[in-house]
Image (cartoon, rainbow, N blue to C red):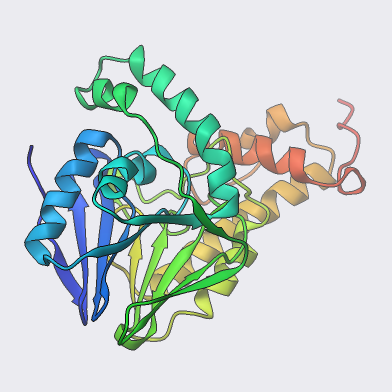
Length: 288
């Protein structure tokens, strides 16, 4: 197994980018031990992450945190649970993970396009036992690690991790940088496109001019990048509201407007956005 080197991005805060899906895993150290943020996409990859973490520090791993329920951030949980870490996520992610895991494993079992898929299909998923609704602080002795659920966006159970004394924010997939994924936010089948802009507004309140922001995939970014992505996501939300309000049918929406991202990447965003609008905000389809 090929590991990834952890790079220090702030005082005792490290991030590693893994080749499969360009996913980030982060580590925060304090006097009382370590916190790991996200666990990669399978039991095998989680074991590799654990080995890589041990090259950073032999200190006990207090917690492994999932920024949301998706497999590439949670399927390595078992390796950390066996190492004694308490698993933590937002209550929404804990509720979503069993169903997501079942569907993901079944899909991976029928897809041999990548060798990682067999590992995904064989992974026994461990759901975090510790959850929270709005915010949670983890005490590492000489520092606090703050977990905040700023709202729904990429999924219903997103959280961000703030290490205030290091000026580091770990944003999960609420922020997307990866060139391998065209830096398009993950508007998937469980996204909340109309709420995502307001969620990022709250995230931006946690980001200062020099904060190192680690997205779920790709290179660390700064406040300007997050502001630009929030603006583009806001355009997506506003365009959905406008089209629905003018009676444009959902199946015509992608071709009826200019979008800040490739239209083929927004199929779920439009479908989910139309469905999430109150009936009063939607007009009858235009008669042609």
